[in-house]
Every structure is written in C-alpha cells, then in structure tokens.
Length: 63
Image (cartoon, rainbow, N blue to C red; front, side):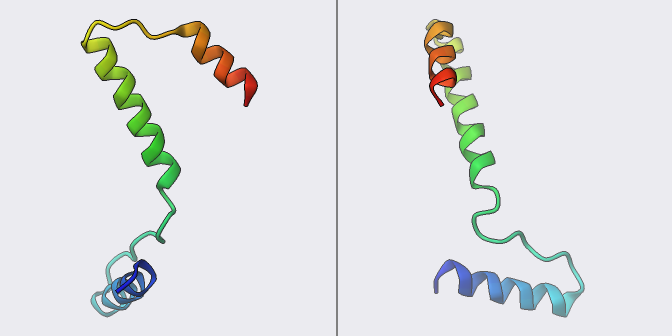
C-alpha cells in the first residue's frame, strides 16, 4: 500500500467516525526539515562546537 492509498483509507475512517481528517502526504515536509536542521544546530551548541555565523549568512545570501 502506498502513501496515497493509506491516506484514502485514513480519510474514509475519519469520515466514518466523524473525526478530523489527516493531513495530506507531504504537507509538513518543509516544517520537518526545518525542525531537523534546528535540532542539528542545537546539538552542535551542546557539544561545544561553534556555529559559523558568517557561513550561515553567506548561505542565506546565495539562495
């Protein structure tokens, strides 16, 4: 069963039980990636590594 089929089954179940439908597959991908990046930075700070502010600014400027 692929993601679309699972989503359709979840929609059917939600409709039968009068609950909120689940989000579509892929709706929260960007948020998940941003959270993972933030978690990586947080772990770097805990480990005592410096985060390159200039490198991060350069990456943002090139986008």
